[in-house]
Structures are given as structure tokens and as C-alpha cells.
Image (cartoon, rainbow, N blue to C red; front, side, top):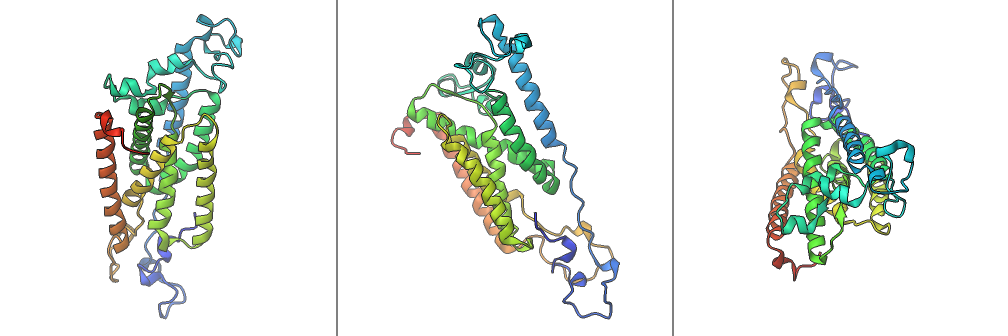
Length: 309
């Protein structure tokens, strides 16, 4: 998204146009090869996994077994709950709760911490699923192509966990018995990472402000979803902040030495720039403190009484 190819960076002056040389075109052996984009497979796998889990959820739900009037009854046990119960064309609340939806009482009193992660693989309906999966493909694949499946997979899971923690603490403070499902925390984590990635790699972007406007527009549209009635933005905020700080740690850009020819004798700069170290270390400290605080309060509800979110 508007980044310079590594071969045009001033890291390797042998390829720069500003260097005085007898060659009008730099000798090819002096130019580092630009890294090949990763072939994305993890985000498509996450996409199909979410779809498969939703199909399984509808199979378990089996609307005709409990309701007389299901939506699209010709789908039989895969038909949807009545509109008044599931306006997003999905399963019953009890089915979601059974399969791993986030619910504060089960978390705080029964210690079912696994729901912090399981809830991000469940969806309240077809509309909910499509909205999340389109965002996943639009944002996740681009990031995986550039940074690889390990970093983006790590980011996706931790951001989802951060969103779930933020939402759980909010539900505990308000004593709400509602349940929550969806990958919004993880997806907003990818959005947050897009912003921090732009900041930490600012010097290697060619059209800096164009890239910034695009990223901010995408983030603004998605954040606006949190203001829709009956949509809790707690997971959105938690996931976004987690992804934002993680981006400073794992989405840095650099010229890898593997892309330099063995005959290259130019001055090699540090793998990272100083400000990348500062931002990365600061973000790491904030994340450690944030997770420590969240887990500490999760199992000590009394500590939440005087805390405002």
C-alpha cells in the first residue's frame, strides 16, 4: 500500500539514483532483491473454519426441533430461528451459549476461561458472519501477504483475546447476563495493526498521506459499527488497542540481509531503526501491563467496583 520496494531504499546506496556512478543504471549485482510476497493461506483457512463452524452451529441448533415457524424451513435442521429471536438469520442464544459464547457468569463464577477464545469462532447469524468474513479477507490477506502467516496469526489470536477480555470486564462491571460472539475483537486488532504498521514503517512509504487517509477511512467505517444500537463496542475497543500495540512489536519493516548479494560490500545499516525499538519496547510494556490487569480483575471481580471503563 504505497511502500517503496526495498531495492529503492537508501539502505543500499548502490541502488539509489542519488549516488554518483559511471553507470547510468546500477549494476544488478549491487541491488538487493525485493522480498517476495507471502502466499496467504492462514486467513483463507480462518475464513473457511468460521464458515464450517457456523454450519455446524446450525446443525446443532436444529430449529424445527424446538420451533414451529423457522426461517427458510426447506433447509430443515439448518433453518434459522424466528426473526424475533435471531434477526441476523442464525441460531438460538442457548445454542451459542452451549458451544462457547462469552458470558460473564460462566467466566467469573465457573472459571470457563476457554470462552475468551471460543467466542471469536462463533457468529450470531449469516449477516454477522458475512460482515466479519469480508473484513477478514479484505484486511487479513493483505497483511499476511506482506508479513507472513506466523505474525498475522499471532496478531489475530491475541487481538481476539484482548477484545474478549475487555468485553468480559465490561459485562462483569455492568452485571449483564447477555452473551457475546464474533470475531470483531480479532478483526479490529487487524485494523489497529494497520495503523501502527503505517506509523512504524512511515519512512518506507512513498505516498505517506494517501496511505494514512486510506487506513483512517477503513478504521473510521468499522469503528462506526460500534455505534449501531445493540452492538457492544467493548470488544472492538479492546481488540483495536491490542492490535495497535502489537503492530509496533511484530509488523516492523526492514531490509533482510538474505536479500543482499554475497558480493555486496556497502555499509550495512542496523536491521531496525531506533524509533522502531522505542515504539516496540513501549508497546510491549503496555501490553504486558494490560493483560496482567485484565486477568487479575477477571478473577477478582471486587476490584472492578471502583473502576471505570
